[in-house]
Length: 147
Image (cartoon, rainbow, N blue to C red; front, side, top):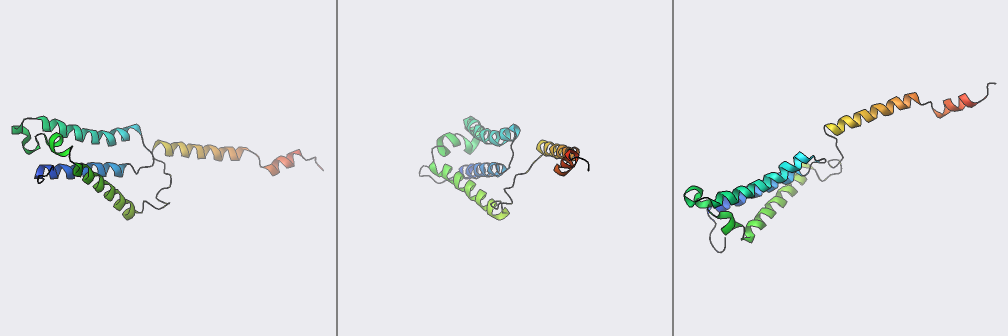
């Protein structure tokens, strides 16, 4: 990076960063989100960068080749960000094509957990209301004079 050959720490960090972004982007294909899902998806990405920064701040005897890796080598290297972006986009595109997620059937709205229970209860109530409400023909028969 910066005209130098990438060492194993830089290459490994770039690869692992790409994996973190790619896997979290897979999680974004879910139809319904809860706040806890957002917390874990975005929190894991933020935690990774905090780890890289914090670990890089440790002394070279502890951090070894990772000393100041993010700050001095990776953050300022456009190839690091470009590689992360390209791997993430390629992985997401390959997964969408391989799993058929681009089809309309795969994009149908699904209900999970609480929403499924609410939908089931609404369906039950509709059935009960339909049973209790007389049909239009029954109302007409009740309103017509007896002959």
